[in-house]
Image (tube, rainbow, N blue to C red):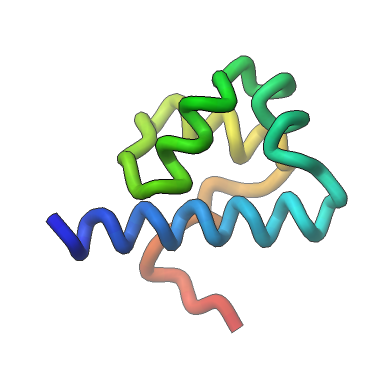
Length: 75
């Protein structure tokens, strides 16, 4: 379970990196995606997002789903 949680926390770190890059807040992301701020906070704390919510986030950020792959090398 810890590894799973760590993986989802990594997803949140990738989301935060993209938010920062675009100058977007988590609040704005919640408005664009229709996801509540509580839902985004849950992801920040390691809860697993549904595939459809990952798609919403990727679309809102204008990035490929590939950007959120856990096995992708981020250099």
